[in-house]
Length: 250
Image (cartoon, rainbow, N blue to C red; front, side, top):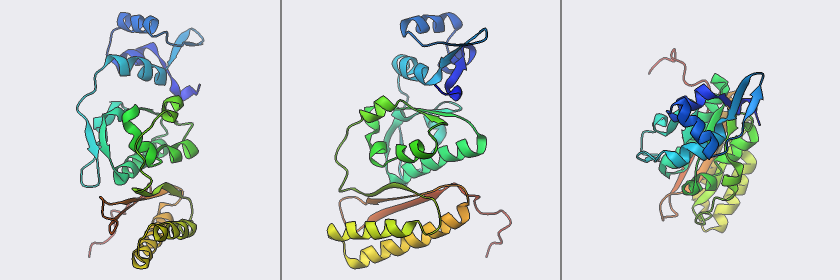
């Protein structure tokens, strides 16, 4: 149990929007674990969200996270540092990377802990390898139910997703990725011209993002666009410094 996952009774009642007697009733009904520090009782925030919130509060209207939509992360928030991914009705690779960069930015820059809850409807996130970079680099700051993640099942997206979300850690790291991806695309019938364009785009954008992102991570992802294998959707995102306000406009 990480310290960042522990909350007191007051915070628990605020998250659930209930009175102290109602929370005590939930505590007994759901057999919530308790952790005593001195005279104060603490509870696992993840356990409260998983056991109480998901079972007692109906879902609000669902949202889409697609490349042609404006993403509003507030629509997914339970509280300031918790997100209900069950509210996502549709997400593509672009939306997954945008949301991933949002989470990385919050953890890195605000030094906060984040909680995620999801259900069997979030198979697309798993297919895009959304949880992979989080588990590898932010596992002590972002909490979710691992047992639920392992049980997620969904359609076979191997033909759709050409490159799951992959982290670039340094300039030049894209070279092996580009070589492996080109070989995969050629085997699947893509022309050498398309592979050349894809390789050039990944190399150029990845090098630029890695150079300017500095110590912050850069992520890339590639998906077949619709059913036509003549079109590929390439997404790259980083949590860098952004464009300086002093940059002259020409």
